[in-house]
Each structure stands twice: as structure tokens, then as C-alpha cells.
Length: 195
Image (tube, rainbow, N blue to C red):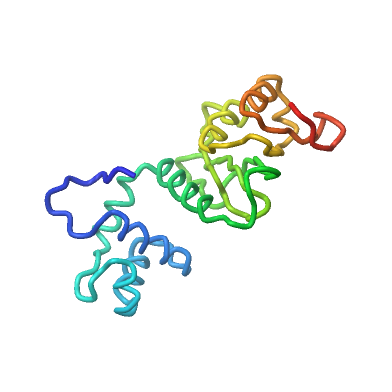
């Protein structure tokens, strides 16, 4: 991932700050202040394992500015590639990926509509492989191919989706990528078949 900061004055590597933030969020810390508090309070051995020195840790302002400057799509893609690379329970052959869209709870404010995203999840290992925003100017149908373009190697992979995705263009796209499709909704008999 590209570092959005100017090279001059960088005290903490991008991977160190992002890894620390991810660990804090997984531990239940959600706000920038809470993430910084977790980073400040983590034991010295953990700080060293994350790449920080015990006496020099990222501040709340630095964490906030860096995370706000990062491209969320690139971050999601990088994390998904990393997770998929560590998945050892399945191979790409015979893999099943579920595509689904959801409106994020609590994302609506008085000024903005609720945020809607679409994700592709590996069913065997329960890992989100790709995610994409579906803003108010488009819909899930137009975001199907761009979502799956983030995943390499769809050959012999079963793709499941809502009936809304029973589109000729989607079937052609999946066939070109070598994927299989599963019958859903009005798409077919309910079993995997070559596209």
C-alpha cells in the first residue's frame, strides 16, 4: 500500500500503525482516541512485536490523520489479499464465494444516507476477500464485476449471489473468468453448473 504521508518526519512505518490500529479494533476499540489509548497501554513486549519501541508510540493525532488519509478500498484489498494468502484450509479449486450487499447499520446521519457495501466472502474459511462501496449513484448490479475483479483466480470457483444478479452480463463475466455459478432465485435449478 502507498503511504499517504510525506517521507519527511515519518516516525512510525505505515505497517506498524495500521497493524496496531487493526489490533485495537479487533480488541473492541472503535474511536481514534480509544485506539490511541490501546496503543499507549499495550505491554512493552506487544509493542515490540508490533514494531514500536516501548517509549515511542504513535499518538492519537498521528493515527487519526494517517487512517483518514488512507484509501479504504486499497486497505480492504490489501487485508483481503493477506488473509486469503494465509488461508490453508481450502484451495481455489472447489471454492465457494458468496456475494452479498448490505446497508451498514448506524452509518446514516441527518446529512447523509446510510452507507451500502457489497462483499465477496469465502464460505469455507469465513474471510471477506473483497469489498466495494455501492453509492447512491449506482446499484449492486453495476458493482458486481468490479467487486470480483479484486479477486484473482476464480477458475472452478462457485459464485453465489442474490437473484438480482441473474444478469446475462454477469454470467458472461463469470464464464470469462472460468468461474461456476450456483442457481439462486430465478437463475436455475439450485445447483452449481458451468456458466
